Length: 271
Image 1: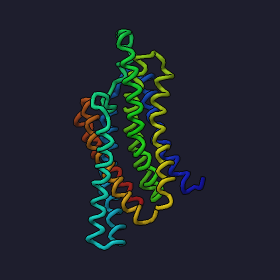
Image 2: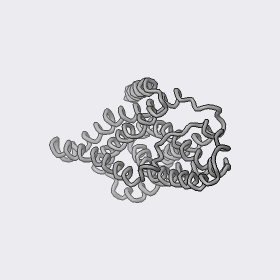
Image 3: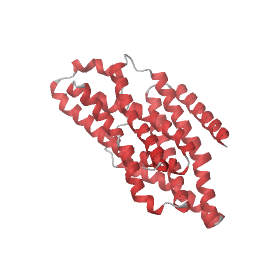
Image 4: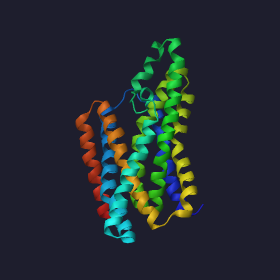
């Protein structure tokens, strides 16, 4: 594997396996640090929103304008942006609402395992397994986002990978808690959580194999527009509501602003 592909793959793998970090936190932490999680999720949203509008969408417009002229290029970039939103929205709509994995769990729930009645356990196991499957579906396009961004510019992809990794941590908790509830098996809960994150590097490889023959400036312009749309939707639909669910509204907003500031500073330094 060439370095041009290997580095993007490593970044995508790092983002994906962070679900396992969430699972580990669920097992070893005594309490859920809601302030930290709210700050982290807000930070992740700030990074994604800022880089989407300031760098990715701008890059999409510039690339497509150069190829198609100002009017058509801007139209194609805008269409790509909303096309990314529609894509992730459709994936979201395929998920049964009552089993949506973005319902946040806390590590304190682990200590309540003894209170769970036997007749509830099969249902909990099913919820955990379905959550893992649904997260894998969600992580698939996120893996393509990280990988394709890194193919074009590793410097932009690094903060994207970090942001996605942060937002995968509470999702790892969401998988491991119900599985551990149902089975009492830490290893099984961890591996369900960990494997759901591996959909990201799998998505990266499949996306690359499918798109590699077509990757030129025109396709990258469209892809960057779509990535911007996908990340804005993820930020508004998943990250900020999850931060709110942990009950720390102002922490989430502080994290959002700091994430934007850090991303802005990174781009200024790279520029």
